[in-house]
Amino acid sequence: MEVLELKPVKNKKVYLYLIGKEDSFFYENSIYEGISKIAEIKKFRFAIIDLNDSDVKKIYQRFIAEFSEKFKIPYYSVDMPENARDYLYVEIIEKKIQIKELEVEYENLCFDLKERESFKAQNLKSWIEYLKKEVKNFENKLEYSTRPQWIVKKVLDIVHKIEEDKFSFVYFAHEKIIAELKQLFRNYNIKVIDIKNYKKKLKSIIN
Picture 1 (tube, rainbow, N blue to C red):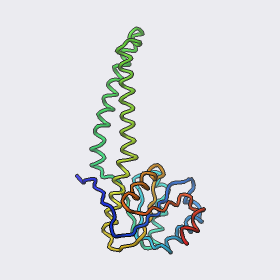
Picture 2 (tube, one colour):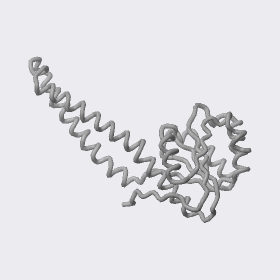
Picture 3 (cartoon, rainbow, N blue to C red):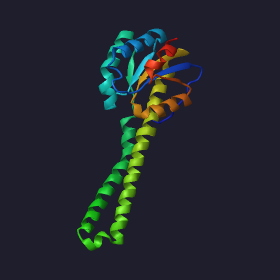
Picture 4 (spheres, rainbow, N blue to C red):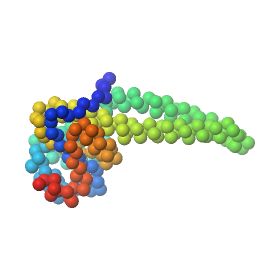
């Protein structure tokens, strides 16, 4: 199984233009033209897109293909490996099975009005709620912490293979993990340029 090992960038100046999901973000021609203008000036070395995220795929897939073809740059889809995800999901699945079994037991108790308020029924109810919170917390950690780490790891692998000592790339990401991505990339010596508020910042970005 591939190991989650993140190696910081050394002896390189790498700039990441991070683009998040916004309402109608890429349905305006001015946005396409603006990003194209940046690409002409900055000469992106490659592009990243999360095609495994349905929202990102729906909004960006056509755009990134046209963008890549126009500027002759490769683009990559990155995500955590399926076997790593499956391994982490085992605990979640086991807990969900346990919850289902406890819910059946609790429902059976509740058929009897006397048992519904019993210590055993209340204890079961509390335990079910606790396990559901555990599952939710684990799912959130997987989605908002572990998965972003894998994504950054995959991007760093690409960066390390490039021999140039100064270059830029662009990343089309889902809004829900952008904050974590920003912090991780900065921790590993990649300068992040967030163009979420693109229209307001365009002049300062391209000057």
